[in-house]
Image 1 (spheres, rainbow, N blue to C red):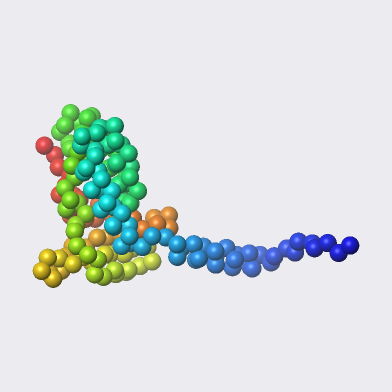
Image 2 (cartoon, helix red, strand yellow):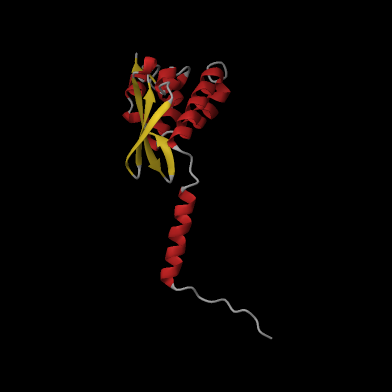
Length: 160
């Protein structure tokens, strides 16, 4: 009887295997361009449904927040509570209809990646002019839009 016995793998080989698996999984994440497209779709859906359907608002806000970095996501998700507790004095854009310019239009023409955890999507503007830039950051292995760094987002948040 010749039973196969498990062979202990040397520690260095185990570490190498884990690193190789992590590298392979990193290639599976959505690209920054796809994250922007998904966020635009989510923003459009929020515009269509949330204003007339307050029950759907929390779900729509949650969906949009999946595509942005955690600080902005928390602000987006808390929008209705912030407006309510401030008696309407502070109004976060997503309480009803966020302006489409929050996520600027335009086709991605270039992706700059100044570091392993940041990227900047350069968009084509009107008539071939340079368009807006969308900063991205890698959070827990996924690309997220860094809304707090975008002027279009800060313009969309207003006080009465």
